[in-house]
Length: 250
Ligand SMILES: NC(=O)c1ccc[n+]([C@@H]2O[C@H](COP(=O)([O-])OP(=O)(O)OC[C@H]3O[C@@H](n4cnc5c(N)ncnc54)[C@H](O)[C@@H]3O)[C@@H](O)[C@H]2O)c1
Figure 1 (cartoon, rainbow, N blue to C red):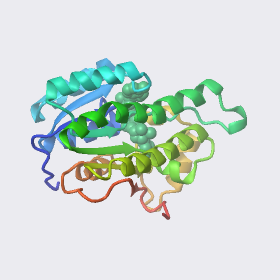
Figure 2: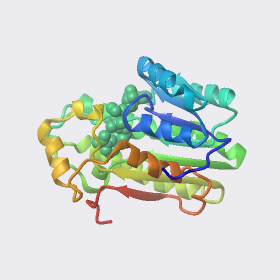
Figure 3: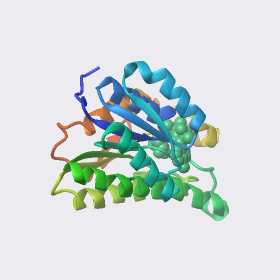
Figure 4: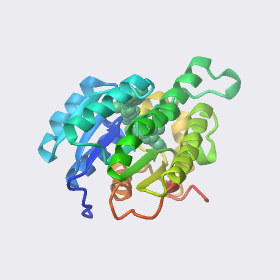
């Protein structure tokens, strides 16, 4: 494991209670950062904090990224407990059901957009002022290869993730004059609890599209995020980092 120096930094990982977010939380802790897990699942987040506590300062803040008041309060609480927020990893997300557009459930469409896209907006909106006050920040938004390519039977997810890519580019430009980097990553499929929301046919489709012919490991995603939130990532902003195992052509 390469050593990334995040000593003295305070980070937030949304959806950090399990899966990719948990791997990112662990990697940031091992790199010396203090981390706040913002997750709507208080039980899972509490377990993660207990299991990771030996690695460094880690706290759980119960928060729902779809609710502005919840996120504004989480930002204040985290800044008070950890002395500000330097790093933000917008990772909380759901897949939603697999169905063609013509029968896609209306409420599921709204829920996927609310969590996967509006949630990222809420967290950036709450945390950017804290970063601006320090004149420093690193933001990584977890998009998906689906946001570049558009996966059939996953229209809400693909559209939300394409939105995250565009939001990353817009915010990166807004903040380019300050030492705040805003980037996103586009992973291929990783075997986590999110698979429970998908059909086996959809999982098989995603795997069939990966030239490396395997799922990406959550630790591989965490490794890229750890560098992206480091001070050394000092020039690139508003960019999309590929983690698709060769699928993406741009
Ligand atoms: N696993 C994959 O195949 C894959 C591929 C590309 C991108 N992604 C993205 O990576 C991110 C993490 O996915 P994962 O596979 O680890 O999923 P996961 O289901 O294992 O974990 C998601 C976490 O987000 C939390 N969460 C969900 N809605 C929330 C809300 N409204 N407010 C706060 N927390 C909320 C959940 O409680 C959970 O702890 C998601 O944005 C997902 O779209 C996943």
